[in-house]
Length: 428
Image (cartoon, rainbow, N blue to C red; front, side, top):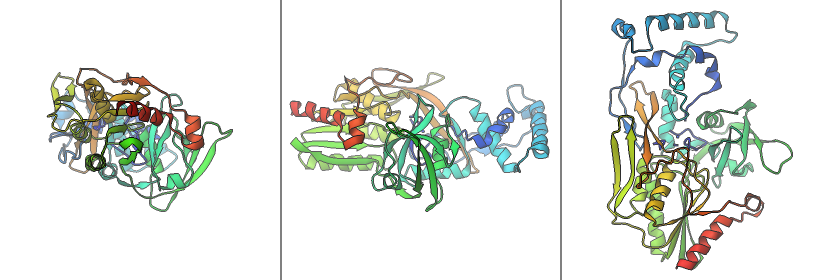
């Protein structure tokens, strides 16, 4: 989940979120010798699912003779010797300059990369600082949501925030990102691509875009600036039908949703459209708190780790939604948004409309280290109230309806939203 139940891979905005592995190609030359130093991290502190807190302590243990002699550790004397040999070779023969800091970070990242898990990653001190900032809904970038396109193996823009550099530059949802500043990004994770897109305020980034309907790639220059990304949008439609969109689940989302829902009730809401399309997920805490404002008494979601330990998240039912509801979902709805959508479907308190969701049914935790760095690891599966494991399967909507992208891109018409309004008008 990027618990991040992340992240869809944790789709991110163009800020890093605690939702994928940072596999930057700048460290690719280290992959062969990256199996060492992180074993010296003794992670001994309390761990938080990525809600709004991060485990602040975990000691960096020195490599003792006893530790290196152990048969159950990677950091044996043989491995230490090979690391030293490779380090000497890199410093003696590698064409470009390389620093000890670069090599050290490469070791840590490579050890986690060996898991071959796109949701586990090592964060440097600076990366972890950005992760914490991102959950507060403020960052420096272009103002676009980034997800991964399985078909092309490139990242794509899954949404554009209004009034941001991305919108002003003419970027659109479903644009495939082929290059960032001339660097081919095929196969790179969302975190890697987001890291390339982000940068200092008032600097430019050039995106090479593939857009359906265009005969050639588009090169679009965007100037970075401070972006305050709203995670909840609200408006009242005709017939007293409220529309609430959640773009992702961050620390600020629960409060924003609570305010929007109360405004809708104050305005005489008779039905609700909850739009989770292209929502990449985010923090489990936010998804659970929002679910508690909609669901009846009972289980919201539960997780199980590799030892079978089960953790349950429940709702007391005191705020159950009392009007008809349609939930819009699509193939980019992932992780935390699938937790909410899955629970709503299991309890039958809303109609799911759209296309089958992404299918990210695993949870990550962030383990903080005392030097300010951290490691995020996949630690459990999550299950809907009825016990459904949606990982790599997704949630099938009650009514399947593809978005007419051509009309949407042409004139902004939204056939899925129109169908939701039609369903609710019949139920009011």
